[in-house]
Image (cartoon, rainbow, N blue to C red):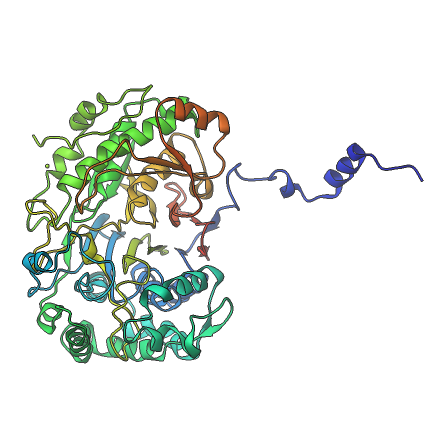
Length: 563
């Protein structure tokens, strides 16, 4: 028999192997799959069952707002590692009838009875990550009802019915969520209520295990029939307040009963013909607009995706924006950030002049005023679109798991500063700086893109990267999310402290050794790292045909689907 040479063996393998083993027949180089395309409706969430629930609601005659609420409720059940009704919510809604974009800030405030002096007496220089002290009022449920009252179509009993059914009968836990639930156990199992809710048979569920949450089913049933007041003024509020008192916490019935969400006006900048919209502080959305305004002053397209010059320019723009973020972004009821100035082209011009194209800055000062999460998006056949983000903040939250309710309270209060005089310093009845931000893009006054990327300080960085991927580098919707990402850490934080030695640049796999070497020569400190690059979901609307394109995160359990 004639021996098979290495060359002939490789040739044979190439002839019989499917085309995707060495190149994709269709689509774009970075895309993990093709975009999802549909005419009637689209939903993209971070968990496939939640996406299916959203589509079911849409097929029942519900609109994009109903579907978004239903998906968020489902995510609170199936992905408690990043969401739940113990947390806050932000949303933008494109109203097809009025041809207008609305913004909702459904974030909660700090306890009225907890003062800055308490932290000082405890000798704390930062607010703890877990336990009773970082707990603020959960705003998500009020956010649901604000959205539903203004835009909803189906009754709330129908909207919450799928999640109630799944909570009673159970669902199989996915691999990623099982991993994060198990990782939460060492931090949270000591807090009363956590084991009873999330550790059936004494341990967090494994991949594929059927998990039920009958307490959450009862809570959802009460909310569905009794409305938002059941949560903020009824039995649920009393249970939360009693539990927090037992744990030595400060969140009270009065804090819950007095909570209100706020309709806010989204703010925007125009990036090369596209209006990119974010919500104003207390969130960090305008940091994405500041980054884009600086990038617009450069020929990003000619630099090329993944080039050292593009990465360098992006990182320096991010550093500049995040120094303003650390100084100015806070609850506008306490400190009115100079938003219009910060997102102006004039300000971007002056800030961009600080960037050295050949050298990484060790630090920047903030400008002078002349001022773990889920994301989902839905769209319906009328043209309504929803961009919604919701979170407990640090993974599953504070660990405070009120008896018999089936959810954990958020630890968003950790993001207050304890530095006297800081704009984001802790105060009673104050909303903390927020990391979660939904995004929206219009073109010529028409809705073009609803998207978001999960992950703390990752979010404004990834918002800007998605926009440049689409507009400067011509990527399709799926590829724009799949392309390798970069993340800069080490800038000054809203909780206090200054950027040290320029911070660190984290590069996802796919960046060449030559580019890394060039970045090192410019003075950047690099670190390869897995994870921490966010979780992307997006829906794009063809402005001529009305056809929807959907894309979802390949790094997580995300799923986009339409009909």
